[in-house]
Image 1 (cartoon, chains in turn red, orange):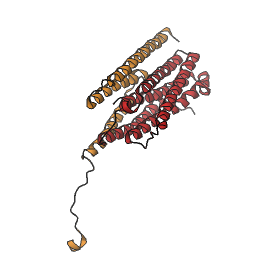
Image 2 (cartoon, rainbow over the protein chains, first blue to last red):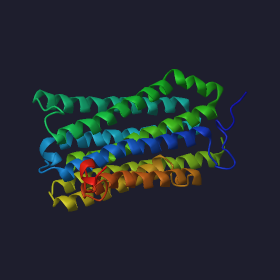
Image 3 (cartoon, helix red, strand yellow):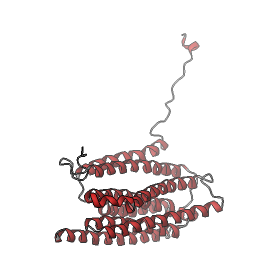
Image 4 (cartoon, rainbow over the protein chains, first blue to last red):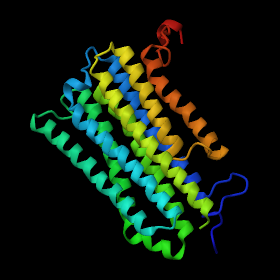
Length: 196
Length: 114
């Protein structure tokens, strides 16, 4: 039995299953990060003193990381556009670059964390560092999850293109929505933690 | 694939590049403003406005939210309402608006005659 509306849109909502599902999942992710952001707000408002992010953290390095993630969002959407142009090879190039940029982002975060740890600045040191490591750590886990999915679609997952190209394009669009959301979270995390 | 389909994708590609360049500029702007060391409330306002603009560009063009179906907007509207409530609840609690213990007079069993 074929599951309906895997690729074709439902006539009432105009959506296929995957697109509705991913947006509902992203809505739940908004609540997850929202809970941590509201914790940050409460901690900062209630604290007798709170450092400026730029006095504790490395702004130029994080700015570079922001540009890396924004670029990866562009390459992700270009990979989707390539499939719309029936160009699998260009798709593989773009999604491959997206995965590589993900590794660059993780590498920079690893450098930032190790730099803090080498000065014995752990999450237990103070409330600012606790919320910093929690927020960026959870974000980093989301980046890793997205990279696993994107790597799968660059590799063995791309076989689906040859049997069901419309369904494969749909899956890349959905994976892209998740990746853009991860970028969107960082767009808010970066100024809140590093610049204020 | 029809010529019009290819043109459509090419138009979208140009949009993606323009949005990318705008995001780069806004990132430089937001970092530049942070070096001015504005008063904290103003710094927070400006930083969040720039972040909102950047986020809107990503959502509208990369996530194709501009021109998306009504069902998605309905789900996101509900999300926005609950997100606002999630942000407000701790602040209201801190300000003493919610969950403040009510002071009640404690009457012991002996005194009440029971």
